[in-house]
Length: 151
View 1 (cartoon, rainbow, N blue to C red):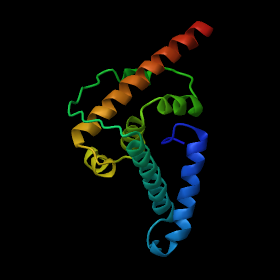
View 2 (view 1 turned 90 degrees about the vertical axis):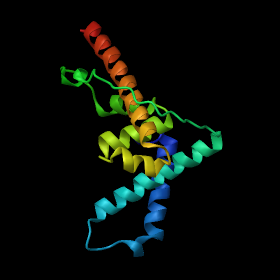
View 3 (view 1 turned 60 degrees about the horizontal axis):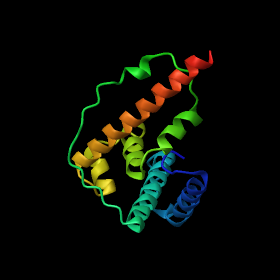
């Protein structure tokens, strides 16, 4: 759900992930965690689908500039927000922005690893993360204002 724009695409990604699981089960090393292995299959399947979508749209982003984001304090405030609302914020990002945000902030990948997985430069990965954070922070501020007005 975190990598795809809608439920239909997310369902497709899960189905493809399970298909890969069945097809590649012989490559599973029983010495390692099954959950970790299958999580990697899910992430890679989503990334493959996003790369395919990117190629189909013939969309090319070559941004080498990284802008610092200094306004992380929004996460420190008391804010009543649920998972679906956060997921909605993530889904409003571009495909690459979603992928970089998820891989870096949630899955714990480095910018170098993200760059390799998405076939972009490290600088481009950093830019997408910065841009995604700015957009999510803006959405959180707007959400917080609406929440205060409702009270």
